[in-house]
Length: 155
Length: 155
Image (tube, rainbow over all chains, first blue to last red; front, side, top):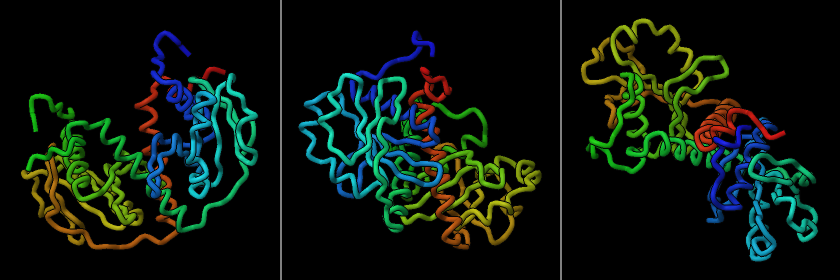
């Protein structure tokens, strides 16, 4: 890692997101950030594993960030496993039992506690995988072709 | 469209790909380019529709580009509909019957002839949708975090 050329994201939560995405990629998962669920809730990271597993990771940069979170239980029905990702300074004993835990920074992440598995039903898995695919492809297209993504066609 | 700020792709085939992706987005499809199938074949455009439809579009920039294509029939088993995309100068009567046809340029595309529908079986649709999702998310991550995508972790 050449830290001279590695531009860090501005916000603490974004730095954790980047490290989690790197760490999960090393485990064979592809990640998208800020995906909106059917409920309107937005997850920090949705990860799709090599066998189609769907994991949600919520990144918490500080105690207050966790304490003000009223929505995390709404994610449990939309993933096979749910994790928190925090940095080394976070008081991890605040986090509820029965959830997964990753230790992260801007560069990497590791799983400290595996989340329990609550497999999605087939119909929801299918809908979530399609939603993940469309989210990722539309974001990619917007980066590759910003003029087209602005919705300004020729006609 | 402000053509002053719109950077055209270098190659004719890439210009068609961009126009097709824009045109399909207007129809509610999300597209990825250069996706590799399980067979090892690489498709120009794989598009995922709002109902989970999977379309393949092959872009042909000239007569020779089509005449040397020995692999297009290998795509038919991996999509619900198959299209060619060509520009206005292409001799469209060269193209085989029973396939779809789009007229495209760098800015947009329109469907001239709808492709026949040959719906994918459930297991293949599931595998293809997952492969599309992983392809799109990993490309997106590589653009957003090129240092991480280089596979150089901290540890």
